[in-house]
Image (tube, rainbow over all chains, first blue to last red; front, side, top):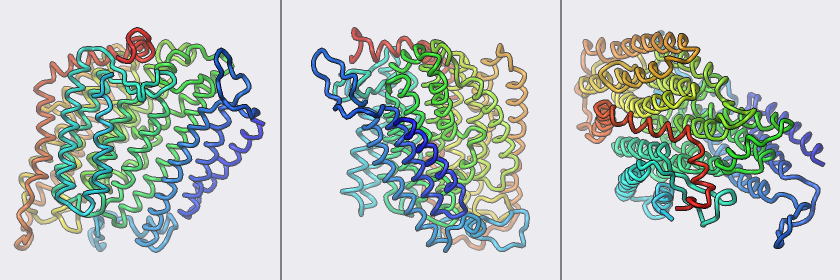
Length: 130
Length: 507
């Protein structure tokens, strides 16, 4: 069971990195989300699979068969944080679209970057707040 | 239980929420609350500093759950020092921002408070996963502050900053998972006990986790292969936010100092001094890249960003020696470089505000209002940042040079530190002469119809530079205190005892 999870994590991370390297910012953000989920699965796997026993500890007894509840708690926290960050990334993306009219990284760079300073003839572009 | 320990986290958390709920539409009220919170944080920080100065390590068990199971906050000299530094910097930056920056976008003050909460939490926590959570808090707040005010370049830099740090956070989480899977603990003190017992078969997992963590902290600390976000983010963030970010890089340095001495230090068996072989070359390379960048920068903002990178390189190269003497020198340089970098970013913003479309670019432009005063301030900050006498940067470099004297790589240290200092001096001189000196000869802009300049920004910059002067004058006592702090870090048994010990724990 763990090996399946491990392979899934590997595949998801690979997909995530492939998306991260894309030129389109929407895909970049999706890549971050896929990687985040892959890692959540990885941490969950660190707490062992293969048991349905609840992690209740009776007095004088060690629950050997129970799954470790701590990674599950950690992953819950990470999922909540991940959601919030996903929403924020989308908000920044929307702002980029509104400001530059594109989400292609190269074109955003071309639109936003200042011209080289040693060419005083080029028209200057205000860099600061509009 | 000593409840002072939770205050640096609780205070900004409550104030931040209050600012969102009650003072959202009232600029004056939110300013008053925000400043009050920062002043109180400084007071709390000083009280904690006084407490920590007796040399004992205080532990606060949240919810009174005992150490390896519950989350603990730990106060030792290093944490107290970082708390006070954060509070001083926070107050200075806030006073500057009140001069106008806080009204250029929404929710500046709540985000600022949450940022301080995340920073303070990261410095106090004694739990690994909790460190991740506080990293996220300070990052989420910083994402908001980074794009504060909007504008094309800033949003572009913001996207890069957000994506870089999201990937960094993922790496943090998987590293925590790897380390937990072989040690079964997330408490830092407990981790220090468990790491030496990890069987050889699991060493690969453990060390992979350890090095991944170094990668994460390296992203925060702007180490060499991971520093590409820094220039864009720092140079394009609003001036006061960039100044606040000066301490964000130090969170990375703090985490490296804390974790790699405590858990992967000399007790750690096979994983002993895991970070040292990576940190030393990366630190020295960062120093070279940063200081060369100062020379090659196109604008004052980029110059300040590269100066931060260079100072982080010097700091981490010194930390990588892993001796108490080097660590105390590194801590002195950390104090100095944080304050100097913050002052420099604020001064750059003063310039950029006054030069119209040219902003802070290195180009000739007519004279601007208060040009002479700002030039003087820039001169002082540049001297501090480049590490020339009489300010504390010189003392910091001297201490570092002295501390690495018996290190096998001493030639590299001395050669690179001294030569990069020269490059940085030339770089700052070039920038200063172009923006202030040569421009001074040009005609002043036609009848500047500006309102009289607000005084508060100058008070803030003066205050930060004043703190540098205090640091210089009081260098003797400060250094003696830092030596004790470094000795405390290098005696992890005391830390472990305080957190896990049954006799003394939970005082």
